[in-house]
Image (cartoon, rainbow, N blue to C red; front, side, top):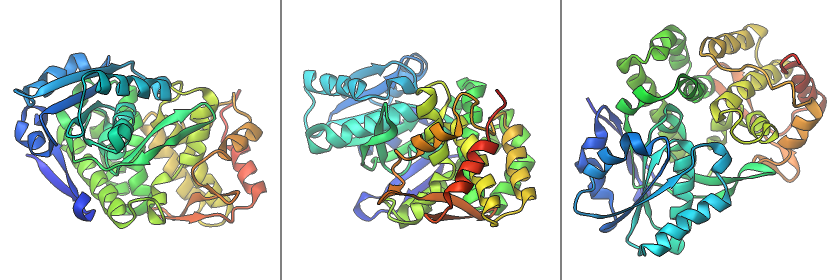
Length: 362
């Protein structure tokens, strides 16, 4: 069964399609193509597995390919320029459509290329990781990394549609599956306590890749993401709640070197740190922190920052963050489990206490 969700953004509204075998259903993708030219952007891991299936849905069109190296380390301006080279050499016109076939790195880069090429062309997201299906493919955030900060160079550019084929998760490595679950758990923590309870009872089924459990987790996650994006497309307010754990997590990713920690792993540790800081602020109890930590541990995710990064270095890295405004760091905290808020009034000593306490043993 296929589920169809709407991201309600006026004339930029689009659908998220969730189900099994969707790569082989051309009626989902073809109505959203701007013209006859298509550039498929994928990576060297995903392309051998799924590019031919996607090509079957693009028959009789002028299809070009750009295959990226796999990994966060290649989410750079240099790699982005390679996509522009392919578009220009084709050459692709303003009616071309970019199709992103891959995980979050592929989706972010293909979307950013689409936002920039000839001042903006159409693109479609075909996410192939759990993390991309529940988070990065939805909402129009596109970016590349800079050595000084993650996702600091980018643009908002909404896709024409998102096609989340659950069959592709069968080839997803266990580590990538766990990383995706971090973003799934985030939705329960920030705005959906009922979903959080379901995740606690269904985690074993999700780790075992039960198809019904995965489809439900993806659908609920996307419903939550779509609702937040529809209310705050450009992160002027409540959309920032989706960044629970990300200020800490992005600092870990940057400090460790992009690719050593998966994004979901860093976010998991960051959410534990956000929970710890929320407790120090008197917002939640230690039992709530323990509940967050227990669920992420069961998912096989890290729950503390790496020992290699000392608290002072982490705090320095957190200062180069999109959530810093007028020199003040805006952090997402928990009022209760299932209810998050944004604060720029967190005492600096408490931040350093959390950074010190939530660090792996050397």
